[in-house]
Length: 162
Image (cartoon, rainbow, N blue to C red; front, side, top):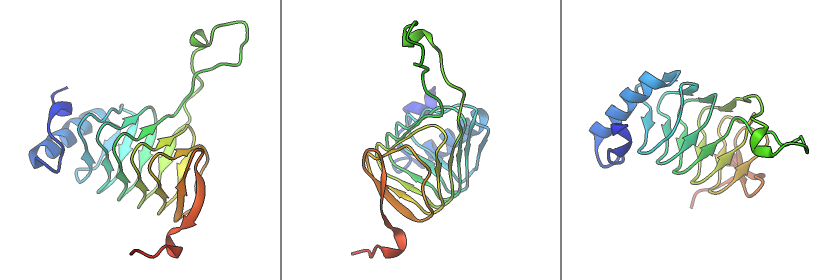
């Protein structure tokens, strides 16, 4: 698609508007104030709220709901289903997929670069996910999470900017 090859939004406002237009034709819902960056991959089951962004080269697979004021760093990956692997009598590549388990990202969330969010997870209001975190479980509101697997390492109310 042409929109994927346009420059990043910070370099060309027209590219931002054009990608938003195309995303609104494809996705379940994309607010006109949202930003879809270069090389982002998504599908018709994605919803993006007001003033939220999908970062450069992100991948959103399946039903994903993104709230308002969400910042998503580059190369974030959100999965909503896994390969099946329970049968020992059949190669894993022939077992198909589990059912979709939607991912919800609530309002005012900051997702760092290369974060991976696994199926069925809800990222609560006000959370910060540190770069490279692998989120396997639901988060608590205003929590700061990092690591593999992601663990709560603080709360936004406790953190003082320098």
